[in-house]
Length: 201
Image (tube, rainbow, N blue to C red):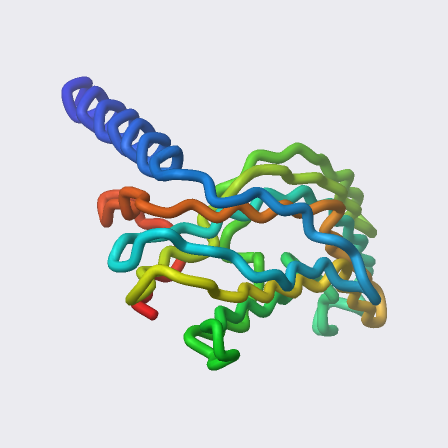
């Protein structure tokens, strides 16, 4: 049993080292702060990629907060529970002529397990309340452009999502966001089951 535990710890450590090495690889093309406009964090700018046929990575660093409250009295047992996690985002990559090369619409929820955070909850026989914050960097996308040149990246992130129902309510909010573009990166290994996508454009 001890030997199995040691092996599992070694494997976990190796995965952590591999992930850190791969995420830090490549050359920075730029680091951009997303600005809040009409309830969304937006990045919509041209970027220049200097080498075609090599992997590029979009890294998203963001900070979030969220809270929920649930009435646990019997009359709400079978009611819908309003519990939101993450906020929706849209990512589009265009070529220099404006043609869409890649489009993704999803939710940041799938990345939250890879971020650090803190929080707490209080629970009684009749209610439960919780609040927490998270902050970290995640690989949003890895892509390989067919050629060097100018591309445009559009990223929209919903700043805040709320939900209410009889006996419960919750919200999830992005407090700040920053996008980094790297080229000539080492793709994240399949050993590390990362929730991002990898595409050729």
